[in-house]
Amino acid sequence: MTTNIFQVISPVDGSIYLEREYASKAQLEQAIERATNAQEKWQDRSIEERAEICTRAIDIFQQHNTRHGEELAWQMGRPVRFGGGEVSGVVERSSYMIDIAANALADIHIKDNLAGERFIKRVPIGVVLTIAPWNYPYLTAINSVVPAIMAGNAVILKHSSQTPLCSERLEEAFREAGLPVGVFQSLHMTHEDTATAIRSGKINYVAFTGSVAAGARIEKTIAGQFIGSGLELGGKDPAYVREDANVHYAIESLVDGSFFNSGQSCCGIERIYVHRSVFKDFVEGFSDLTRQYILGSPLEQETNLGPLVNMKAAEFVRNQTAEAISLGATALIDPSLFPMDHPGSNYLAPQVLIDVDHSMRVMTEESFGPVIGIMAVDSDDQAIDLMNDSEFGLTASVWTDNMSAATAIGNRVQTGTFFSNRCDYLDPALAWTGIKNSGRGCTLSSVGYEALTRPKSYHFRVLT
Image 1: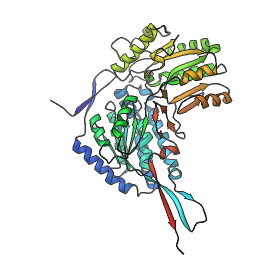
Image 2 (image 1 turned 180 degrees about the horizontal axis):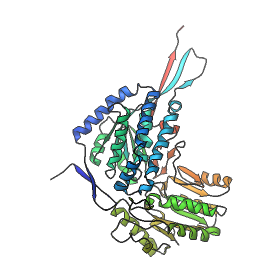
Image 3 (image 1 turned 90 degrees about the vertical axis):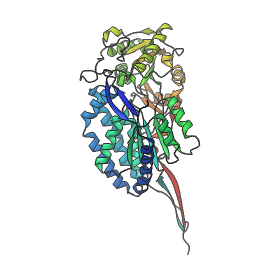
Image 4 (image 1 turned 135 degrees about the horizontal axis):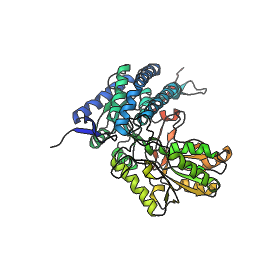
């Protein structure tokens, strides 16, 4: 007997946290029709009106900060002490994209001496389908949701079946803010029904965040539809600590960049290259700080390292780590320091590996968990070659007191975002983008509005 019900299994204790029903085909068709009809009217609203409603929605969303944090802990395992951080990120990114909308969407006027007027308008593309993952469920969604609505589009949000409450909470906020019915809708959809929606001929853009394999399926589904897409996929983000780096500062930042969210971040640090002259000091300090993590229930305030989202994810990281050790890597963290880490558990101790190289999957394959490999290098050139030796290119960072060197290295590293002396942060004023298998397209910044609109040219001639 088939059922349209799905369950959210909590990583906290393996219990059924909630149940939801997938949308029926009729409900899907109705939602797309509502979005199409609503968008035709919404695009006529002024940017000021759109901004007022979007700002009100984000304010309403922020008022439930504590609730959001607790629900995230139950759904995907992030400690409640960090729950407010994602809400703050939603406010920061949304506010920025709302503030710049008028300039980013302004007409482009061509100045000349012709008898008439020429200009380019940025008009909405129509209905945007946003497909968001579980690891940063609000942030990954809001990157496209708010700018799409601000640009005059309608949005349908399909969230991961691990975090369905997140799409519902966003819809509640927009509804309470007075957004017209149909402009923003959340739907719980199967993969098959998501593909059906894309093939409907009524979706004009797909904003997807997820794995490389899922991104390839999205591209295959889109083929022949002549619609745009933005694909934020995987990462194996590197860091390079130069000999002139502030080692203490680099350690603090890179430990956090490696293990925040239990390493379940596409832009988290997954491999580190350290100049040999500071390698010993860096590794010792990095390992000492890692041992201070408290692995436990994400519902406890003292916990700063929660479980991985499910058993499959934990076993993947365990296998990757065990394979590296079998090939000669040295593990510096004793798992017994973290009693909740044991075989058969999705609570996983952080691990630091040295004596690693690129023959090991832990240095080349996305881990998406709390394990980091650290290699010694002898020069900038060697570090750059190793950083570029990857199928991914989302972010990369260098740690140095020499900004000229940082710029020169950044010009050679193949990545979408290059940091110096920081990592794992999305500045909404900058384009968020990746290269290689990290995807294509762009969200955030004024550039992020380009994919959510299309240019329409006006050429008026005055007859005398």
